[in-house]
Length: 632
Image 1: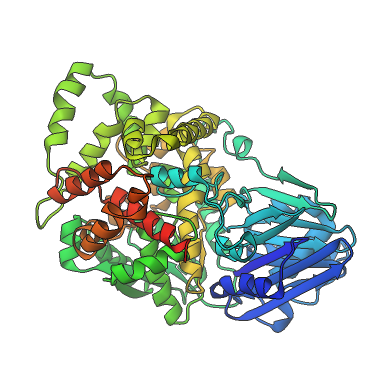
Image 2: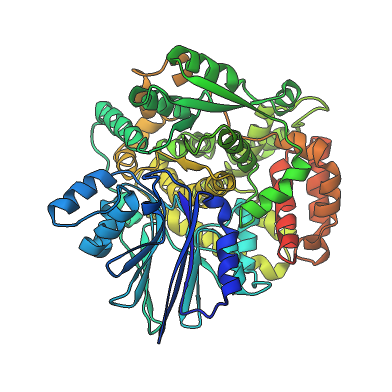
């Protein structure tokens, strides 16, 4: 795991290039390197910051240059040993035991055809001196980030958006559609970038730039076909178990110790137990909360389950209590995340990775992705329930149920009411058509309410974002559950969860691996019909069935916990003054982008307990802080 940056035929001073490398220094503290070529019509600079995981020797440092190819690579190739054996049989020679050299030789042998042979997470740039072409590539699902900017007939790129700032200018122009997207979704989708002159390389794609300034973008893996195959008639749970165990085993490849996240829920418990079957020395990290905060948030006691599982399997469990000075930490997190991401769970990821890194851990396994693939989120079941709710008489829904739910308070002075918050959320979307209901179930505003919040000049961006979501949803499989899972895999997973996990973990030089977000696991998941994923009220039913031989039923079938932060406690207590200063009276309001009265209503409704608007307020706060940082 590392950080990469570079330019090809983009005018840049030595100071700018050094600044690009320094901007991603946190991603790789173990080694720093650069390579350049300065010839007529060919001006190349590749920079690299290394976090040593596989082949710890200096010989594996990057940029890796060999026989006319120069490579900078961020990620891990889990099947690199098998690929190496295949390449050796074809005549390739190697001077290191690194996955980096395997990637370089695989490209030399197969070109872009090597990309779909790779099992792993990656973002890389490879320059070919013979052809004068620079190629960027990104893994199938967007686990690893790669930003780029086409400028002056050339290209600049980096693992993080902040690496492009030195060549984008003092104040890059902000894309208003991306800002609107960050308010609607609380993240910026992969098809958008917060800087107008920059972009994200799409997952499953490669981009080639030639010395004459031309470029072409191609997909090597198309989710529209790969994830929408007709489901098998019968579900083979034994085959699913095999795929899951093989993926976890593959993700244990490393020359340094590996730990896991262990929340005590199904996903992390399953991968931890499977990892311990192959690595008896593995340990785990979990989070806990102060009792008063847990009561206020109405959170389940996940810690007890994590302790029980760890004790049962003899796994060392490190407990990290979350009680940060959030007012002090939040500005740092906003800078870390690159784009305005309003999910407070990023703070959890940062703090647990920080604790692991301080203990000497470089690599952690995460259960991320299982919910998206197997229908594990509450929104998945809620949207199936909404389909039945829409069959009720309109008078009953609109005249009785919805007004009654809206009148219920979401919290008292000392305690939150989670069931009331869920009910209010449900009636906000349940009456909408299927696709609109799914979008509304995990976004902040309906279209009318969003228009009230925004400057009217921004309304066309709302329509664009709504249309884009509808287009992705329409690409999905025939059954409703898998349509939701497909949309999450395309949008929610890379745009939010993988993005904040990468930035938060790499901010403290820690690599997070995601065994569920593996092409074999994903293929197996989308061969399973939705009726096997949600059975009556049971979410992730098929994954739970697969986990039964390895986990106790009390963990397999316990209510799902949440990888959430103490959001309501923070908004109502720790950040109360900051909310008044930066949300109610911030630049976004005074500039007219946001309507002052609408923002005031959000804050007042949350504080009075009429509605839970803590997520919306958090996003407004993070966006305001991000906006202010752009002028610093």
